Image 1: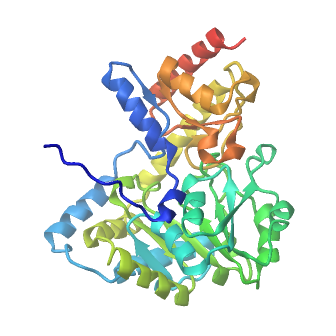
Image 2: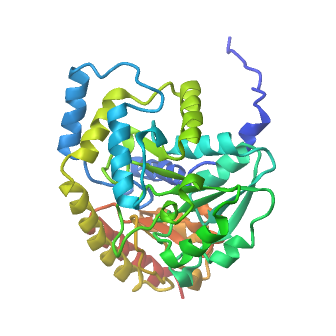
Length: 396
């Protein structure tokens, strides 16, 4: 007898959760590979480098030394101190270890910020195109997502007056992301400074997603937390995944005013108890150890950026601006006459190149694709060759 199950009656909030299309495209690409098709993967946003050896060794030693038990919900004191030192130096602000909360990956900081600060029907501003989990989590907590635009002609920066015009009495949180996923854009001081002046002293928090802070190719990444009067209104989200090629280690952190950090620690107690202790010891080595691999990876990404931007600009119907951070390009493909989804599907199925439609990052991503250059130069060049052949054969 075959067992039958009644349909699960899920809570209504589950219907408000979105997903990350990168993983959906990866599944489709793997299915094609299983059928014998060669696929070049430019869809997944993670470094293709190994975690530096000194960090791996630190984790092994930590396991052997007994760092396998519960730790404080907010993180090990030594790691919080190291994070406070790093953020103080890199952002030009004074950070106390008590203002740091360590989490298993950086996404909990986004989730905790919304849970701790936002009531149903409050408004949360977020970038569009932008990381899809922003809108997903805003919807999940019952708040109203309010998108603001990133402009291609401004190297995918926002317009301060345009963003400020969206503020209402219901605005509770603004999400910033720089360097930016999916465009690789970097918010300039000239954009952040007037926004900071508008927000200073108001009952509005900023979640500044700075996970790509170390992956910048020209100038410096500026944090809105560094402007006068803003530190107490800003939650800095950062982590180890992108900078140290530690995506699978799940190690992130938030920096915020101490009273809010205590609430985030309470959310950690209720959700995860703590972040794995041996992973935190690896993070301590990442911050305090040799930074040479980080710089080597950044230089390699910069070289790949040049290859992919130059190549995309030679493809019929494509136009690609040079990103200033992260490891993504966001070429404009509107001249093809096809939708973003149509081009992305065709490139996967016909050319064997996996990338993402711009609409995977919001409706305003239409007319673009996102490609990750976290792959070898050889694979990037082969992907460009295939894309060029597809365009010449298909587009007229």
